[in-house]
Structures are given as structure tokens and as C-alpha cells.
Length: 443
Ligand SMILES: Cc1cc2nc3c(=O)[nH]c(=O)nc-3n(C[C@H](O)[C@H](O)[C@H](O)COP(=O)(O)OP(=O)(O)OC[C@H]3O[C@@H](n4cnc5c(N)ncnc54)[C@H](O)[C@@H]3O)c2cc1C
Image 1 (cartoon, rainbow, N blue to C red):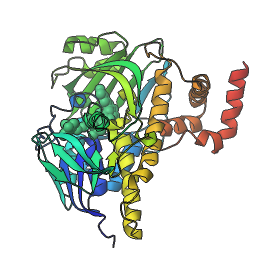
Image 2 (image 1 turned 120 degrees about the vertical axis):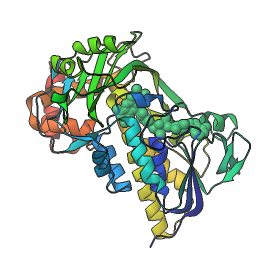
Image 3 (image 1 turned 180 degrees about the vertical axis):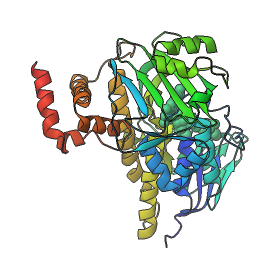
Image 4 (image 1 turned 90 degrees about the vertical axis):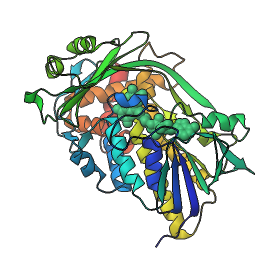
């Protein structure tokens, strides 16, 4: 049996990152306290602090697998709550750089729910784990750092809470990392890429002929097209439709404009929502930057402080990676702590072990998304030195995926983060891939 690693762990933030982290910590500390400044709903409803929750949220396969490992049976709970299981390659229709991808069976399914439903189910499961408690409407002002080690948190009302391990899961606008730097306890670089993405979304009751539908649509036409859109079946026989654009373009402001906007994507998408009753108001969201705070190469970083989720790295949402990165990172943390518990290594040096692992997972999402963002003229900033080669590789993979089923399945697995781009260098597809890459660069 694994002995406990400490008395108390504190997780700041009860979003997908904080809840995944708490699942990783539960059972390894006598008590795991989750603090969130927001009021948390009892059920699966939306909440104020997570404005992005009104927009489509695809949980990628790697994220589903990580959550399932942390919380066995959770996928079935998603299904019981009304999630549709979509066979990737067949049910998920993707319009990608000029055309609809040919159908294939990628060999795995994903679930589709609204973001509040994913979070609500996760919160219910995590709250039931031994030793876990959630304090809502509790705002944290700063981490308390003593002799280079995070020893707890200071709340906005001045109360302090002690912990053996602290987690920052306060999301992309969370103030605690900045506060940590201002207090002189950390020195790290923040990298911003100006992506300029705007979303507009609403939910619709499925028309009777579409009830039980497992088909979803991803419309990502590629440059020079600036517009994109997603239509997914979610709980309670609803569709969620998100449309958006890069740059200064404003997304629709009314339901009628939203439906009209979706007409341009495909007749099937339009047919699903045309005449369907809207079950929500239209909501908009603008994300100006992809941002990562490079704690993993910080000149100064406190021991005992684990950053996770968007607080560490937050990418362009159109690639659907955020929740998955958080869940995969939490799984890595869980494995690390299990080993430490079993070997009696304790918590000494845990942050130094954790940060490179978290950085590697975040970088996989960052590299895929930022390299794609840089193709668009609306993305501001100097392109990195390896941009031309990365684009040549992405273009070659896309072309091969059109012609060859092995590459199509590989590409879908890459997008779902169950495959690593490194497999193109040394995996079974490497020779065919590099032959095609050389050919394209020579021509
Ligand atoms: C429009 C849009 C669409 C997206 N689509 C997808 C998608 O399809 N798939 C996907 O995986 N991801 C998607 N994402 C990204 C995803 O929403 C994030 O990656 C994910 O929510 C990150 O979770 P988190 O827990 O790190 O942060 P959050 O969900 O932002 O949670 C942070 C929590 O910290 C709390 N908090 C902040 N400061 C304090 C404080 N001082 N004290 C106490 N509590 C505090 C907040 O109240 C909040 O509850 C999308 C994002 C956007 C904007």
C-alpha cells in the first residue's frame, strides 16, 4: 500500500485543470482542498468565471483516456449524462484546407458534451474522492512562499491555509503567477503569440429527425479563409454551434446571423440548425493570445508549487487541446506521485521532476497549434526559424492523409494527441513520409 505523501494539498481553481489535478492528488494526501473564487453549480450548469464554457469543447481522445485512468468509469458517466460517442474519421466530419476529409475508421471514439457538463461530472466525481473538499467563493490572493518553498495560500480576506503541496490551476487569466513574480518568488518568461480569434456560439434543440445524431462537423478551411466553425451533438438532444474568425472580423451577434453564417460551411450543417429552436442566448468570446508561462525554464521557481492547465499554457482553442493537456498532465503527476509514494521518496524535488514532464505535454499542443496559427496572416509576430520546415512537414502529412488511409489515421491520432509527431521520424511511416517530404521540397 502507498503511504501518504503529506497532510494537505491545496489546489487553486476548480476548472478542468484543478479538478484533474485534485483527482491525481486524492488518496496521496490526507486532505486535498480545492479553492475557487466562483460560485459552483450543484449540477451540470454553466458558471460565471468560465466564460469559454458557452462554446464548443471537444475532449480529445488522449484527454478522455487520462481522465478515465484518473477516474475509472467517467467516460460511461459522460455517456449516461447524454454524451454522444462519435467514431473518429467517420462521425466527425472535417473540412480541412479546402475539402472534406474522406471517411475512415480511425479505430477510436470520442464523447461530445457541453463544457459545463464535462466539468460538472468531473466535479461530482472528484468531490466524492476520499479526503477531497471544495471551498467555493474563496478567492486566493497569493501563494505563501517561505525559504523558497510554497507553504500554502493567502486568501483575499487575509486568512492563510498551510499545505505540503500547492497547485496553481487558475486558468489563462489567473492572477497568481503574476503575483508570484511580483512578490519576488519566481522569475520566468511569458511567451505570447497574437492569434486574434473570436467565437460566437449558441445551443439548439435538435429537430426530431436529428435526435440521437452522433455526427459532428469541424470546418477549418485554412488560409486565406479566416472563418471556422464547429457543430457538435451534446446532452439533452441539443446541438452546440460555434463559429468564429481570425483577425478583426466580428463574429455574429444574433442567433439569426449565427445560422446564416453557418450556411457558408455546408448544406448539412445549415440543415441541422435551420428552423431548430435555440436553447441558449448567443455568446461571444475573443482570445487575443496563445500564452505560455515558462515555469519549466524559470530562473527562479518555488519548490512545492505545481502549475497546471491554462495557467501554464493556453493555446488557440480551435484545436481543442486545453482540457486534454490538463488531463494528460494530471495523469503524469499522478504516476510521478505514485512512484514517490511507493519508493518512500516523498515530495523532495517533485517540482523539478514535474515541470519538464508538464512542459513536454504542453509543448506537443503548443507546437501543433502555434505552427498552424502562423500560417495565417492574421497571426502577428515573427515566425520562428523552423517555421518553413514545420509547414513543409504539415503540408506533406496533409497530402499523404488525403491519399493514404494509414497517414489519415495517423493524422487523426496526432490531432487527438494519442500519437506523437516524433513517430514520423522513427515510426513505421517514417520512410514513406520523408520520401514524400523530399519530393515536395525538391519540386
Ligand atoms: C472559446 C473557447 C473554446 C475552447 N474549446 C476547447 C475545446 O474544444 N477543447 C478543449 O480541450 N479546450 C477548449 N478550450 C480551452 C479550455 O477551455 C481550457 O483549456 C480549459 O478550460 C482550462 O482549464 P483550467 O482549469 O486550466 O482553467 P479554467 O477553466 O479557466 O479554470 C480556472 C479556475 O480558477 C479559478 N480562479 C482563478 N483565479 C482564482 C483565484 N485567485 N482564487 C480562486 N480561484 C481562482 C476560476 O474561478 C476558475 O474556476 C476552449 C477555450 C475557449 C476560450
